Amino acid sequence: MWLINQEHQLPIFWQEGDAYSLFYAPGYLVVAAQTLAAGLWQDLQQPEPHTPTARRLHQWAETAVRARQAALTTPFAPVCLTLYLHTQCNLGCPYCYADPSPRPTPRLEVTAVYAAARLVAENCCQQQRPFTLVCHGGGEPTLNQLHLAQVLAGVQAVAAAAGLSLFRYIATNGVMPTAKAYWLAQQFDLVGLSCDGPAAIQSRQRPLVNGQGSTPYVERTARILHEHQTPLHVRVTITPFSVRQQVEIAEYICRRLQPEEIHVEPVYHAGRAQTAVLPDTNQFVDHFLQAQQVAATYGARWLTSGSRLQEIHGPYCHLFRDVLHLVPGGAATACFKTGASPQAGQQGLQIGQMGDGRFSLNRPRITALRQQLHPLPPSCRDCFNQYHCARDCPDSCPLEDGETAVPSFRCQVQKKLAQAQLTQMGVALWAKARVQDGIAEGRVMTEIMRL
Image (cartoon, rainbow, N blue to C red; front, side, top):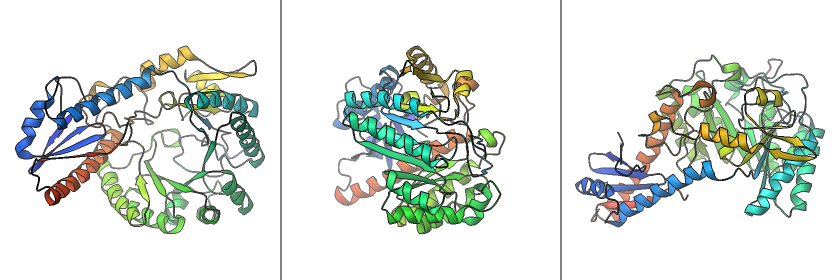
């Protein structure tokens, strides 16, 4: 159990062990011999700590507090443009949060894309940052190749006119003709390929609309991407059916698809899976950690986005991530689960739109949404993972559901995974200290992130 430093309302935590204790401020981990732990904790209660270790923990905690506050107060100036091109899909995944249609649906207007791209380009120039373009879900973005090509060409022209480099990412199910896969490999800097595992799992969780398996298409697309040396990540959805098969999934993906990273997410409790049973918490975590070790033997990273110790973050709201997210109808939405402009308006999530040839942001609405979404729920305020956790997003949202009952499924999973990572690092630090220093001073520090 982690104790929090309540004296100065700083996120500094202490976990006592048999031989040593762990001290943690967001981004900074300290291992202290048990004989020195109580003294270090007492020093941390002081307004001006005496020891360098305590001062560094204070500094990292204060930096984290400022970084989190900046997410609320810094003006929204997106440097990433995310596009839901339409809501049509050629798969029939039973858990899809977007609930797309197998038939053609309204497409995102290219004029809105170009106008939004100019807005993003202005921000990128002011912040001296590259332009990031993301073509993502809501449907399968590659289904209309001509439309996608128009979008790419227009955004590339906007970025070039502003003297900006353009990073292009696409999330795809990989089910496409060979020629399109070759075209995709040439057009994008990084491809996120969705695959839930070997054929027995993939056919059940990600079948074609006609019910047939999609595995041969996915494997072929991955081979073509590797031929062109296009970087590849894989996205895996874990359901109650596949939760105990994560080692098998990792083995298959690493051998057959050979990605650099594998992003693993428990099924979203939304869309077609709104009433679905979620995986068992302990089973998910135990098998996740086993699969992570397997992936590491192949040189691949097995990750999940809900808890990221290397970042200060919260829920997936675009308002805190410098992301301008467009959906068909031309509106910008604050939530990635929103698939069309009418939906964004009805939910009160529309934060921008076209007007007089320009794309404008609704600043009052952005401010109001930020103020509603930013506060930590009272149940999170003593949690060591509070600065790295997406909380219960996207299963529930404070705008709709109020505070989620804790411990929720995602709360437990994210806390357990963060605990496992810190424990592993603590073990390694303690072993290193005993070998190198004989734990003479009883303390070892390591930086695990830079804010």
